Image (tube, rainbow, N blue to C red; front, top):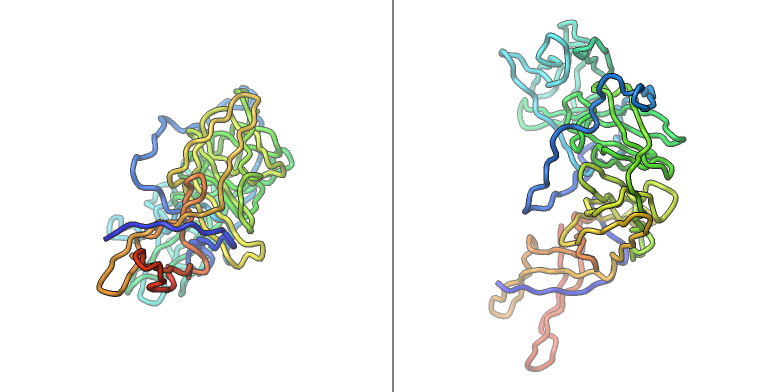
Length: 381
C-alpha cells in the first residue's frame, strides 16, 4: 500500500450533512487521539442567590419540534430504552419514578405521556414524535418532546425533539438537552443555539449575544436562564473573511476550555471572544444554493491565539489537499476509500460530503514514459 496526495479547489463545498433520519440533528465526527481535557465542576449550574450576585434572570418558553428537527448540534444522537425493575422507561426525570414508561413492540412503541400509568401515545414509524411530562425534584413540571427511531424487531431508540427559548440582548437563544437525560445545564454535553440560525454549539460557559459577552447559567429543567456580563480580557476572532471557498461558511465553532463560540452567529466578521487560545471544533460549509455541503473538523489545524484588544485572523479553506492510500495490482491502481481525507490550507478537515458522491478524477502517469496510464473517478459514496 502506498500513500499519495492531490490538490484541488473547493468549488462547492460539498458537504457533510449528518442529518439523522426524519429530520434529526447533525453529529460531527470527533477527532481521534488525545482526549479532550475535562474541567471540574459545571459552570452552567444555577446556584441559589444568583440575582444577588448581579445575574439577570430570564424566563424561557418551551418549543416542541414534532416534525422536521432543524438545528444541527454537531454532537449527540439517539438514546436506548432503559429497563428498570422489569419495566421499560425513557431515562428522564419523573419524581419518584425511574422515568417515562414505554412499551416497545415490533411495529409501534407506546408511551405513558402524562405519568398516569396508561399508555396514551402510540408511535408507529421513524420520526414519530409526542410530548411527555417531566417532574423534577424541586416540583417543576415541564413538557418534553421526544421522537423515536425504529430498530430491528421490537427495538426502538429515542431523542429529544424540542428546546427552551429566551430573548437576551435582543437575541433569541435555544437551550437543548442534547444528551437526552432531561437536564439542560450540563456544560459541553447539552447545546445552545445563538440566534436560532439552524446551528448549535455545545453548552458554553460564555456566549456572545449581539456583540456582548455574557457568562450564562441554566436551570436544570431549562425553564430559566441567568446571564452576567463577562469581565475578563477580550479580543476578536475573524475566521470568516479569510475562509476561501465558492460557498458559504455556515457554521464555524471554536473552543477555549469550557467555552464554545460559533463565529458565524453574529453580523460582524470579527467576533468578540475571551482572550486565549482557540481550537477549531467543527462546522459546516455549503453551497449558496444549499444543495451541497461539507462538515468540518479540526484535523491538524493549529490553535489560534486571540490576544487582549487584538484581532486574530484565520486563513483557511481553498486550496484543498486530498490524501489517500492506493494499491497497484498488475495494471490496475485502486484507491482505498477509507483512507481518503480532505484538508484545507490550515489543516482543517472536510468530510461526509452531501451529496455523498465526491468524485474527483484520478489520473495515473507513467513516470518513465511521461504517458497517461490510467484515469478513473474516486467515489466516496
